[in-house]
Length: 177
Image 1 (cartoon, rainbow, N blue to C red):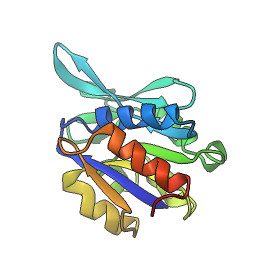
Image 2 (image 1 turned 180 degrees about the vertical axis):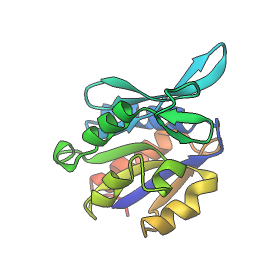
Image 3 (image 1 turned 45 degrees about the vertical axis):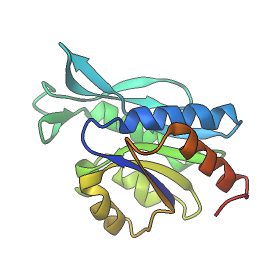
């Protein structure tokens, strides 16, 4: 995969930065596919995450703090088997063939344990332009696990969505690295 990364700490706005970049990419006509994992709040506190298909807008529960005891537990969250299957089906290579950029929000502890989106990352073609969201504490481990050096790393609080989109548009259209 040709990896591009958005990184930052926990709760630093990685998904928000990705969402803004995707909107700008789409406004230029680029085809973006993949998944977004927006946080879900309960009483003002992060309670879990959903997984959203960037093409269709379809949404499933991905994780919850009070998830079913049979769900895969990582940290304080339980991960829904249905949400994981949904996300994996969105990231199936057959669904990505015409995408110019594939976004995967987020790659972290679950994937480093071989779960979550790990099988999808393993199956990506070497030429797939992949915009990954990775928490800063997992950045080195993710690069090591999937044996890549990112072509570009953008950080929350430093970079803006239009910068990310502008660079990716130049790369996709052959006017950048």
